Length: 57
Image (cartoon, rainbow, N blue to C red; front, side, top):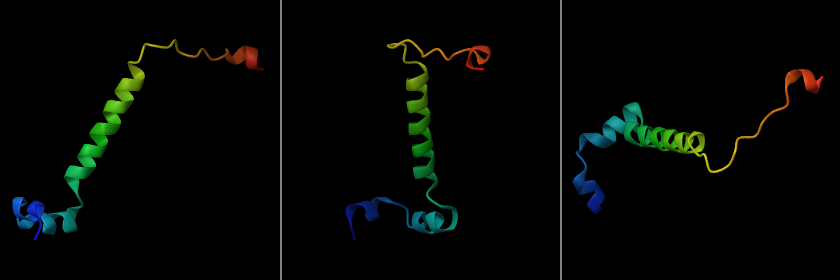
C-alpha cells in the first residue's frame, strides 16, 4: 500500500469507478479556464485585425 492509498478515504476508489474522477475533471476545467482567461486578458501584443467582409469579396 502506498502513502497515497492510506490518505484517501476507502470509498474514494468506488466513487471514482461509479462517477469518474470528478476532482481531476474539475481541476482540468479550472486550468483550461485559467489559460483562456490569460489569453483573453493578455494585452502585451495588439490583437490582429481581420479584414472587413466587404473587402474580402
